[in-house]
Amino acid sequence: MSSDIRHEISQSRPSIGEAGATGDWRNEFPFVVAETCVAVKQGKITCQICWAHCPDACIAQGMPPTIDLTYCKGCGICAEVCPHHAIGMRPEAEHGVCAIEEGDAR
Amino acid sequence: MTTRVITGNEAAAIAAKLARVQVIAAYPITPQSPVVETLSAWVESGELPAEFVTVESEHSALTVCITASTVGARVFTATSANGLAYMNEQVWWAAGARLPIVMCIANRAMAAPWNVLNDQQDSMSERDAGWVQLYCRDNQEILDTTVQAYRIAERLNVPVMVCYDGFLLSHTVMPVDVPSAEQIDAFLPPRTDPLQLVDANDPRNIGPVTLADPRTDADGVARPGYMEFRALHHGALLEALEVIPEVDAEYASAVGRACGGLTWEYQLGDADVGLVAAGSLTTQLTLAVESLRAEGVRVGVLGIRAYRPFPAAELRSRLAGKRLAVVFDKALSYGYEGPIAADLKAALHSAEKPPVVFGCICGLGGRDVSPKDLAGAARRAIADADAGVRERKPDWINVRPEGGAR
Image 1 (tube, rainbow over the protein chains, first blue to last red):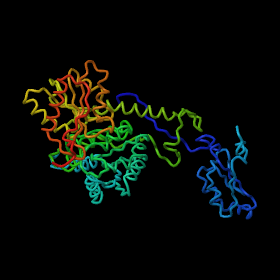
Image 2 (tube, chains in turn red, yellow):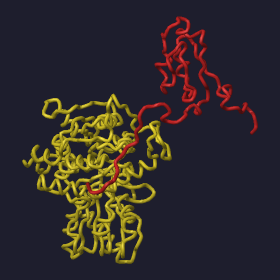
Image 3 (cartoon, each protein chain N blue to C red):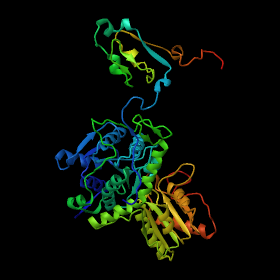
Image 4 (cartoon, helix red, strand yellow):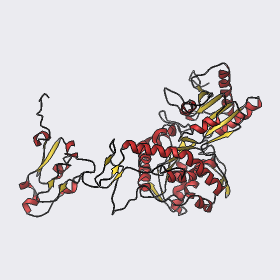
């Protein structure tokens, strides 16, 4: 080899928080209505369709499944795929991350 | 070694076979199609033990090559003009992911308007994408350069475009010495050590979001930022300035024939004037030199084999002491001038007593360029230089200002 130029590519190991705390990318946040969730109603780990579809792997299986809002980007896929409509989306302002009310002059 | 009378496209296909490529993915486009038609026939017959992946577009063709190369396969594809433009996004990905893909480009004019004939606008427009670009002047060089391209690509972890003029070479037969499989096996060992080892037990994100600044990853390991990766990539292209001639010399030891490394010259040593071009035009220029020398004009040819990386130092050295360099570009950076002319001027900027550089635009969309035309353009350039002109607009060879057929 004619020189010691380093050969390296950009790569990472899949792990929690590899792209940073992406929760602050959200415009809307998901919320789970536990009594509507089929897993809660049946008292066992069933359905879990939201867990399977989350593209950021930030939903944990459970009764009901839980969503890690530190990393959830608010894409809304979980709300879209829930067959029992147990997941809804609300504006981020309601969650309190963004405290500015609409029309509030800074 | 056997001598065969073959087209440039056949030479490219034979080279891919001699390189023992493992995955081929391509979409047909004139004038490249016979390359992959030939390879697919060999895969079908079992003569070439490779996977041939048929795809619905050039974008997918290069994507298949990217994924196969990522897991360690030696891959091949070929395209032309709008097919290359359609690949554009993945052209950048292949380079940034540092994959040793070899792609033959049968150079063809870009549409609109449609034109299937030769110029070099297609690959010249990919100049900045981070690939090595080598230009071939005859069918022998197509075969030799395509085999060498794998060695260069795999040493540097950068993809290589092997560019040759559509129809003028791709569909024109000439004698080509075909090395034996044993000769090429000795020169080109199987691919080893990909930068990305794909292992289900050690999963990776390859080419993930990489932010501007270096940062510590989730494992606590310091990772370069985007700009550091770009600097490393640029370093590899600059390293190619040494690796390309080294590989050419290794090839000469194994096969008994060299292509000239970065540049090539003909009767340039004692010349006052250098005629500069890339590809088959350089062969045409040797004929122009014959007629100009018969008139007592001391001219020579300087052929560019490696366009990226640009061999600036070698060009400065080969043109040292010349009074004029006339550059013949089969491409144009619209609103400026021919790409080789512009790059050569920049390369000569720091030279002591640099030659005047005049550009010519020729052969666009397959417009014929004869040795007589080239000699005429050289005479005009010499007359301008003799008249003290230092800066000139490009000379459009044979363009008819009235725009009509005669």
